[in-house]
Amino acid sequence: MTETSTPRLYHGRRWNYFKDCLIERFGGVVYKVGVDAGFDCPNRDGKKAWGGCAYCSQQGSLSPHQDPKLGILEQIEKGRAFVRRRYKAEKFIVYYQAFTNTYAPVSVLRERFEPALIDDSIVGLSVASRPDCINEDNIGYLAELASRLPYFTVELGLQSVYQNRLAWVNRQESVEDYVRAMEMLNAAGVPVITHVILGFPGESRQDMEDTVRLANDMKTRGIKLQMLHVIKGTKLGVMYGREPFELMSMDEYLDTVIHMIERLSPEVEIHRITGETDSESLIAPDWTRQKAKFFESFDRELLARDTWQGRLV
Ligand code: SF4
Image 1 (cartoon, rainbow, N blue to C red):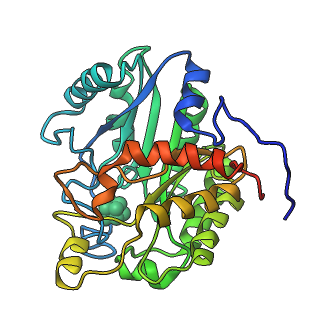
Image 2: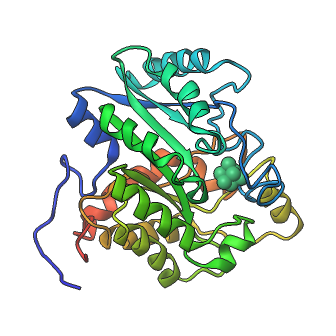
C-alpha cells in the first residue's frame, strides 16, 4: 500500500461522486427514475427461497415515491415530474429498481426495457439484479444495451463477502456468484454498480474492508455504500423488534465510510454513501433520517483529515 500526499480532487470534491460525473458527461442534472416493471425474484418466489432478503421491503426496494400499480410509462412520467420539480433534473436514467430485473427470458426483458427509451431526455437504463440472474442467455442483450445506449449499468448486490452475514439476511447467494457475474459482465463490456451493506452486527472494520476490496478488485464501475438500517415491513424489522441488535452511530459510520473510500480506486464512481429510506418507513437508527447532515459532515471531515478517495490504494 502506498501513501500519496497531494489531495486528489474529483469535480472539486475529495471523492468521485456519481452525480458530478453525470453532470460532466451529459451537461446538466441527470436523475434516476425508479420503476417496478413486474419482475419477481428467485429469492422470493421459491426458486431459491421464499420471502426474500431480510432487508427487502414488500415493494422489492422500490422508491417510496413510486407507485408499482401504474404501468411502466406512467411510472416514468410520474418519476420524471417528481425529480424535475424537486432536483431540477433535465435528463433521466430509468432505473429498473424493484425486484430482480433480469429474472425472465430475453424476449420479456426486451418488451419491458425498450419502451422506456421514450425520447432523448432518457439517456439510458440501469438494471438492478442478482449475480445469480446474470447468465449466458441474457449477457448478449445486456452487452447490446451497453454498447447502444449513452448510459447503461447493471446493479448487483454483493452486500458482504462473508457467507454467515449473507445467510443472516437470507440472501441465498455466494461470493462466487458475484465473482462469476462480474467476470461475465466485465468480459461483455457491461458496467456494474455494486451494492454493499456496512455494519452487520459483529462486523469488524476489516470485514467491511474485505467486502469493499473485492468490489474494487473486480473492477466495479460504481459502488453504493449503505449502512445496515431497519425499515418497516421487512423481516429485519421483525428480527429487530424481537431482539434489537447494535447499529452504528453517525460518527462510527462516518469514520467507516472514510476508511473505505480511502482504499477505493479513484475510477470507482460512488453512487451512495448512506441509505435511501424515507422517514416514515425507517425504524432504526434514527440518525439516518439526517442524510443532508451526514453528507455535509462527510465532505467536512475529508477536508479536516486531509484525506480523499484513493489515498491508500
Ligand atoms: S435479491 Fe433483491 S429483490 Fe430479491 S429479495 Fe433480495 S433485495 Fe429483494
